[in-house]
Image (spheres, rainbow, N blue to C red):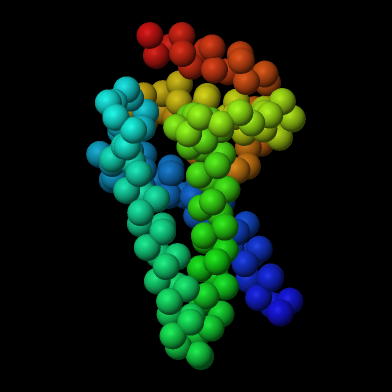
Length: 160
Protein backbone atom coordinates (compact mmCIF):
# COMPACT_ATOMS: atom_id res chain seq x y z
CA UNK A 1 0.00 0.00 0.00
CA UNK A 2 2.77 2.46 0.95
CA UNK A 3 4.62 1.63 -2.26
CA UNK A 4 1.48 2.44 -4.27
CA UNK A 5 1.06 5.81 -2.54
CA UNK A 6 4.76 6.52 -3.15
CA UNK A 7 4.33 5.65 -6.85
CA UNK A 8 1.37 8.03 -7.19
CA UNK A 9 3.04 10.91 -5.33
CA UNK A 10 6.43 10.31 -6.94
CA UNK A 11 4.87 10.30 -10.39
CA UNK A 12 2.91 13.45 -9.55
CA UNK A 13 6.14 15.25 -8.60
CA UNK A 14 8.02 13.83 -11.60
CA UNK A 15 5.28 15.09 -13.92
CA UNK A 16 6.17 18.72 -13.19
CA UNK A 17 9.58 18.02 -14.73
CA UNK A 18 7.96 16.20 -17.65
CA UNK A 19 5.53 19.10 -18.12
CA UNK A 20 8.34 21.69 -17.94
CA UNK A 21 10.43 19.77 -20.51
CA UNK A 22 7.42 19.21 -22.79
CA UNK A 23 6.38 22.86 -22.52
CA UNK A 24 9.86 24.20 -23.30
CA UNK A 25 11.10 21.75 -25.93
CA UNK A 26 7.95 20.31 -27.50
CA UNK A 27 5.24 22.99 -27.16
CA UNK A 28 7.71 25.80 -27.84
CA UNK A 29 9.61 23.51 -30.20
CA UNK A 30 8.50 21.17 -32.96
CA UNK A 31 4.80 21.21 -31.92
CA UNK A 32 4.47 25.00 -31.73
CA UNK A 33 1.73 24.60 -34.35
CA UNK A 34 -0.41 23.00 -31.61
CA UNK A 35 0.58 25.48 -28.88
CA UNK A 36 0.52 28.72 -30.90
CA UNK A 37 -3.20 29.39 -30.42
CA UNK A 38 -2.72 29.26 -26.65
CA UNK A 39 -0.35 32.26 -26.79
CA UNK A 40 -2.45 34.21 -29.27
CA UNK A 41 -6.08 35.20 -29.44
CA UNK A 42 -8.43 32.61 -30.91
CA UNK A 43 -12.15 32.07 -31.24
CA UNK A 44 -14.08 29.47 -29.33
CA UNK A 45 -13.69 27.58 -26.09
CA UNK A 46 -11.32 24.89 -27.33
CA UNK A 47 -7.75 25.38 -28.51
CA UNK A 48 -5.56 23.17 -30.69
CA UNK A 49 -3.29 23.29 -27.62
CA UNK A 50 -5.86 21.08 -25.85
CA UNK A 51 -4.48 18.17 -27.88
CA UNK A 52 -1.61 18.01 -25.38
CA UNK A 53 -4.12 17.19 -22.64
CA UNK A 54 -5.56 14.47 -24.86
CA UNK A 55 -2.08 12.96 -25.37
CA UNK A 56 -1.33 12.98 -21.62
CA UNK A 57 -4.81 11.59 -20.84
CA UNK A 58 -4.39 8.73 -23.31
CA UNK A 59 -0.98 8.00 -21.78
CA UNK A 60 -2.51 7.83 -18.29
CA UNK A 61 -5.37 5.64 -19.51
CA UNK A 62 -2.90 3.30 -21.22
CA UNK A 63 -0.80 3.01 -18.06
CA UNK A 64 -3.86 2.33 -15.89
CA UNK A 65 -5.28 -0.26 -18.31
CA UNK A 66 -1.93 -2.05 -18.60
CA UNK A 67 -1.61 -2.10 -14.81
CA UNK A 68 -5.11 -3.46 -14.33
CA UNK A 69 -5.02 -6.04 -17.13
CA UNK A 70 -1.47 -7.39 -16.68
CA UNK A 71 -0.85 -8.45 -13.06
CA UNK A 72 2.94 -8.31 -13.46
CA UNK A 73 2.61 -4.65 -14.46
CA UNK A 74 0.19 -3.62 -11.69
CA UNK A 75 2.53 -0.79 -10.66
CA UNK A 76 1.74 0.95 -13.97
CA UNK A 77 -1.82 1.61 -12.76
CA UNK A 78 -0.40 3.61 -9.85
CA UNK A 79 1.92 5.53 -12.15
CA UNK A 80 -1.10 6.25 -14.38
CA UNK A 81 -2.96 7.48 -11.30
CA UNK A 82 -0.07 9.89 -10.58
CA UNK A 83 -0.21 11.22 -14.15
CA UNK A 84 -3.99 11.64 -13.75
CA UNK A 85 -3.59 13.45 -10.42
CA UNK A 86 -1.08 15.85 -11.99
CA UNK A 87 -3.45 16.39 -14.91
CA UNK A 88 -6.27 17.28 -12.53
CA UNK A 89 -4.15 19.86 -10.68
CA UNK A 90 -2.82 21.21 -13.98
CA UNK A 91 -6.37 21.65 -15.29
CA UNK A 92 -7.56 23.42 -12.13
CA UNK A 93 -4.54 25.73 -11.98
CA UNK A 94 -3.94 26.42 -15.64
CA UNK A 95 -7.37 26.32 -17.25
CA UNK A 96 -9.69 27.22 -14.36
CA UNK A 97 -7.66 29.62 -12.20
CA UNK A 98 -5.18 31.30 -14.56
CA UNK A 99 -6.97 31.36 -17.90
CA UNK A 100 -10.50 31.30 -16.43
CA UNK A 101 -11.81 28.90 -19.07
CA UNK A 102 -14.28 27.73 -16.43
CA UNK A 103 -15.83 30.57 -14.47
CA UNK A 104 -15.33 29.73 -10.79
CA UNK A 105 -14.36 32.08 -7.98
CA UNK A 106 -11.18 30.83 -6.31
CA UNK A 107 -9.09 32.68 -3.74
CA UNK A 108 -5.68 33.31 -5.31
CA UNK A 109 -4.30 35.69 -2.69
CA UNK A 110 -1.84 33.22 -1.15
CA UNK A 111 1.89 33.53 -1.81
CA UNK A 112 2.11 30.22 -3.71
CA UNK A 113 -0.78 31.09 -6.03
CA UNK A 114 0.55 34.60 -6.58
CA UNK A 115 3.97 33.25 -7.51
CA UNK A 116 2.86 30.61 -10.01
CA UNK A 117 0.25 32.89 -11.55
CA UNK A 118 2.83 35.67 -11.90
CA UNK A 119 5.26 33.24 -13.57
CA UNK A 120 2.56 32.11 -15.97
CA UNK A 121 1.57 35.67 -16.89
CA UNK A 122 5.24 36.47 -17.50
CA UNK A 123 5.43 33.37 -19.71
CA UNK A 124 2.53 34.74 -21.75
CA UNK A 125 4.27 38.09 -22.33
CA UNK A 126 5.87 36.36 -25.32
CA UNK A 127 3.53 35.47 -28.18
CA UNK A 128 6.10 33.65 -30.28
CA UNK A 129 7.86 30.30 -30.20
CA UNK A 130 11.16 31.75 -28.94
CA UNK A 131 12.02 33.99 -26.03
CA UNK A 132 9.58 32.75 -23.38
CA UNK A 133 10.52 31.87 -19.80
CA UNK A 134 8.81 30.15 -16.85
CA UNK A 135 7.77 26.84 -18.41
CA UNK A 136 6.60 25.15 -15.21
CA UNK A 137 2.94 24.78 -14.28
CA UNK A 138 2.76 23.98 -10.57
CA UNK A 139 6.18 25.25 -9.46
CA UNK A 140 7.90 28.59 -9.98
CA UNK A 141 11.16 29.90 -8.46
CA UNK A 142 11.11 32.75 -5.94
CA UNK A 143 12.18 35.23 -8.60
CA UNK A 144 8.52 35.28 -9.70
CA UNK A 145 7.36 36.60 -6.33
CA UNK A 146 5.49 39.71 -7.39
CA UNK A 147 1.89 40.79 -7.35
CA UNK A 148 -0.16 39.02 -10.02
CA UNK A 149 -1.85 42.29 -10.96
CA UNK A 150 1.56 43.72 -11.89
CA UNK A 151 2.58 40.70 -13.97
CA UNK A 152 -0.84 40.46 -15.63
CA UNK A 153 -0.91 44.19 -16.42
CA UNK A 154 2.56 43.96 -18.01
CA UNK A 155 1.43 40.99 -20.09
CA UNK A 156 -1.76 42.69 -21.25
CA UNK A 157 0.06 45.95 -22.04
CA UNK A 158 2.57 44.11 -24.18
CA UNK A 159 -0.13 42.14 -26.05
CA UNK A 160 -2.04 45.24 -27.16
